[in-house]
Every structure is written in structure tokens, then in C-alpha cells.
Image (cartoon, rainbow, N blue to C red; front, side, top):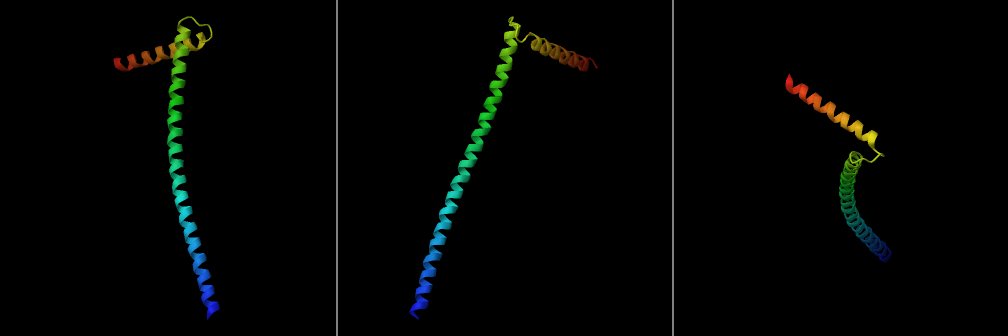
Length: 96
């Protein structure tokens, strides 16, 4: 009988350890999922900030070209022509 009790006790200890390890892993997984969610939110924020700065940069390039910078004159002329076409299109739609 003693051997069976020893085997049962050993099994109980092992099962207890496995259940404890499972709980630890579950908590670690939850913590990592929260960190992942925070990181993804932060990445989205950074992407929006990059987009905003890119837009500001393009605006600044256009403003510099209008002030006489030779670097971006062609690009500025193309943007002005596109704006004029858009305005003409809007006027045409309003006239209808």
C-alpha cells in the first residue's frame, strides 16, 4: 500500500506543479497581450505623427518653392496647376 500512496502523492505533487505552471503561463500570456496591445496603439500613434510631419514637410517644400527656391519649382507648378484644375471643376459643377 505504501508504494501506491507514494505514487499517488508524487502524482498529486506533479499535477499541482503543472497546474501552478499553467497559471503562471496564463498570467504571462495576459501580460504579454496587454503589452502587445499597447505597442500596437503606440505604433498607430507614431504612424499618424509621421503622416502629419510628412504633410507638413510637403507644405513647407511648396512654400519654399513659392518663395523662389529653385529646387521645387517644377513640383510647385504642377501642384498649382492641379489646384487650378480642381477649382475649374468645382466652378463647372456649380454652374450646372
